[in-house]
Length: 130
Image 1 (tube, rainbow, N blue to C red):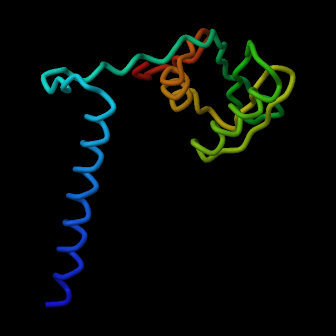
Image 2 (image 1 turned 180 degrees about the vertical axis):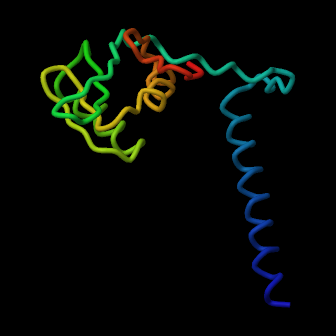
């Protein structure tokens, strides 16, 4: 039964560390913890600003352009990097614009809205659910 032995030791260790954490919490605070409290609601993301999303064809290629970014150049580059890696596409960032390869407006909109940005422009494609 050596296979079960490590599980028993792990359970015993978890029980002792849980009791120690409860004891240290109770000793630091003399009032008893209120177990009837509901968890605090998760705050919605803070509004970060407004971005303009548009679709353009440059040199015959489809591009999604995110413009009117208010922030530092470093923040712009970081946002472009996050978008490109999340969507698995290519693109670039310069002159307060993010250029993404392809018509990815329907994928970019939910990401930016979850990040706290309000949007304007032609980000609603025909037949899109946004």
